[in-house]
Amino acid sequence: MARDLKLKEDWDTLVGVLSKQFADGDTLELDAIIYLIGVQELGQIHRRFKKDEKLHLMHIAICRLLEPFGYYEFELFDEEGWPHYKNVEPLPPLKAGEQSVLMKEAIVLYFKEQGFIS
Image 1 (spheres, rainbow, N blue to C red):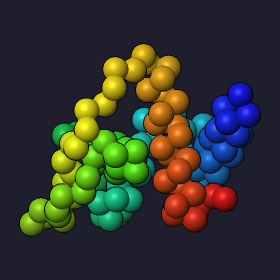
Image 2: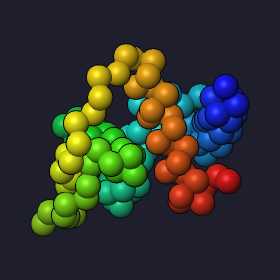
Image 3: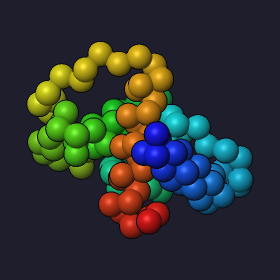
């Protein structure tokens, strides 16, 4: 149970910091944070994205977030600078709540690795 409490504490801290920095204090949802990670990973932070590109950004983020867990592996950057990942292990069947916990854990780990939170 202590692990769950630590994750909740880290998640709440991260959401607070990101919401203040990117949403004028409005609370960012999980999908918005995944999108921000996709933009960060692409490295093209000062451009507007089309709807289909936004979906690709979220896919990039999910692949990057699940890479440390062994589900994806970075493959290459294409000619336009977009990263591509390959699936190396199928994701286990997870219920919606379990998916959310996995993503929150992966996001907290990502921002700790980036030195954004401690």
